[in-house]
Image 1: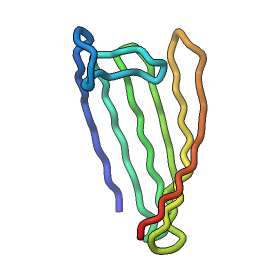
Image 2 (image 1 turned 180 degrees about the vertical axis):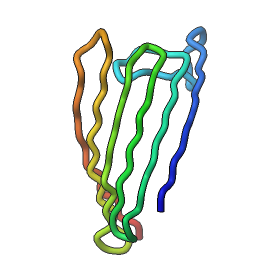
Image 3 (image 1 turned 90 degrees about the vertical axis):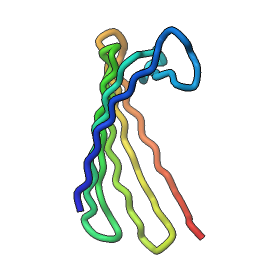
Length: 101
């Protein structure tokens, strides 16, 4: 099944706090737009990705591959790419293991 989402965020730069938005390089922004989609091939494996824009002209793109080899265990490898006109592009990856009892 295919699922998609779009989120627009606003956070005042005037008053830092819990409602602040930061771009991937640690700068406060006022606006951000995040879009994402996921597709489940079957009960065991799917694919998902997001694209996020920040009003600092930074972008972040991520993709992951959620896999459930057995009931109650989820393994999700993910790769993330961040880019900005001012700073060097950044790639990183992570893997998440989640066990539900």
